[in-house]
Image 1 (cartoon, one colour):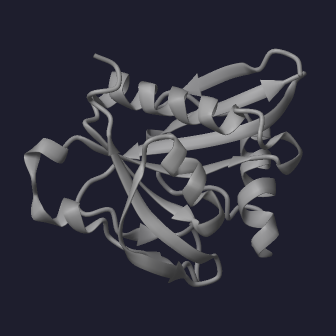
Image 2: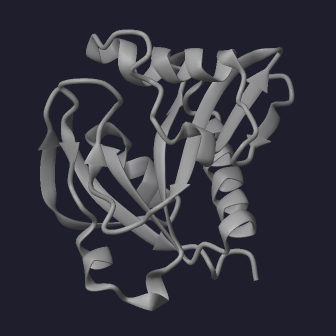
Length: 181
């Protein structure tokens, strides 16, 4: 494999169309969702990480600040399923804030198992700590990604649940402020 190139777009910096095309191909197209469903209303205020190998975007990841408890729509547009709240954030514990959510993360299937997901996640988490002084990270992992996130230090909590039209998930979290001291 050629050396991967990692790119980070901070809030207000646009990600290229190839980033969104990969996000669609990995996360939305397999669910039968239309083009455009890979975009979220707050993409302009989020962090975006993408990895290129030989000029092709092969991995993507997105993070944003969580206000409230993190409950939100799964995608933009009508008929979006609701994703559940992160119950620990509902307790208003200041030691958990600022909190960020990892979303829209994936690797093109042919490139999986080569450490590119871990590389994208590492750069995303680091950028979240640098940009927002994030203390904790939160995510809703699809069933097939739970083991990946667990290997990266994320811990599942709350019972499993299903997001309509997407499938089984687990909520996961980890402290971020201890990673880059």
